[in-house]
Image (cartoon, rainbow, N blue to C red; front, top):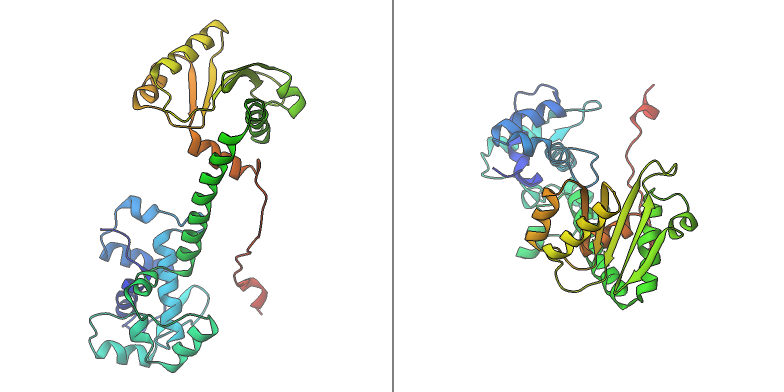
Length: 301
């Protein structure tokens, strides 16, 4: 089954702690992963920041909310224990423990007020509250990035072929290819129709070369174009090539690129824009948010 949201984890986590013993968070993750019958792939799945496994992250957030409602206590770093209130809650035999259930406790209401969290009043908010704060932050980042990709592609298509030449070279240099921009741009060949053909050094020392073809198209790039590119590589006695387009590649083009002897990397418009964003080509950082956590070593006596 899919990885449960953190609210669904609350009741099983509280039941796991019902023996009144101290429990380690990592042990709880293993037990609950087995209870929810997660696959190995689901157990290894990471949150977008790659800082934690998704299941671990959600167990931690379930523990955090239960603790702030007074149902669990944090006895020491990485451990938790059920409280009398937690046992009383289990004695009620609830079908589910979630945010609405926890709102009966004043400590939890205060906690949510301090976090500027709102009560759920409709289905849209209910959906949002299945996500942890980390999930919401990642989802917001994803939406902003997706919108930015579309904006980048619009800008590229509005640029001149010469500007597109420089953009491709600039991106490859930022990614670590070709040494300096001047060195890389000096080996770029003639501008083609809506694209460039050229060679760039694979690394700063120039041990190998990569042949580049770029097409500033809006229609799909088909197999014939990749065949021509493979032929160009053969003519240059080159083993590696990058084909960059502002559009997409047809299925036949992708399959053909896998069959040729040369190593051909295909970069479509979405990937091109994503690489530009990743390497800050034509992109500036508007705002930075620091995600902080407690430095437990600082508080050790």
